[in-house]
Length: 62
Image (cartoon, rainbow, N blue to C red; front, side, top):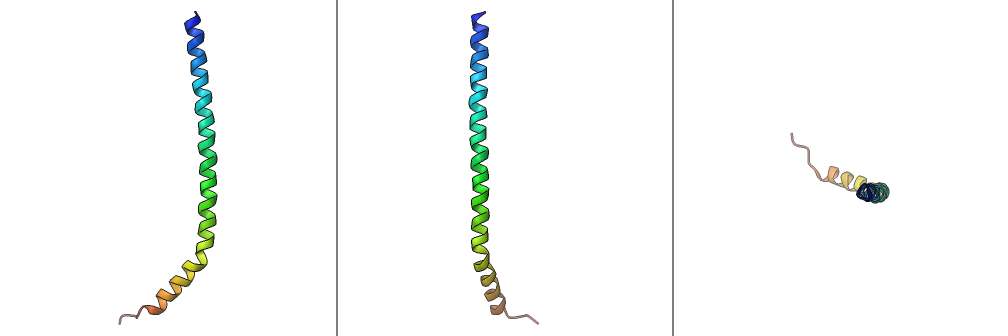
């Protein structure tokens, strides 16, 4: 009978650890998404400027 209690305790402990690590992964993914969005917003003006310069350099074929 004590083996059953030990197995249940180990299983519960394992699920708690997996749940804790899962929450940490979700929080890290959310922070990474925010950082990517912030970087995209910071780079967009330079990207627009670059595309405008490339457009003026191209010579239309015809």
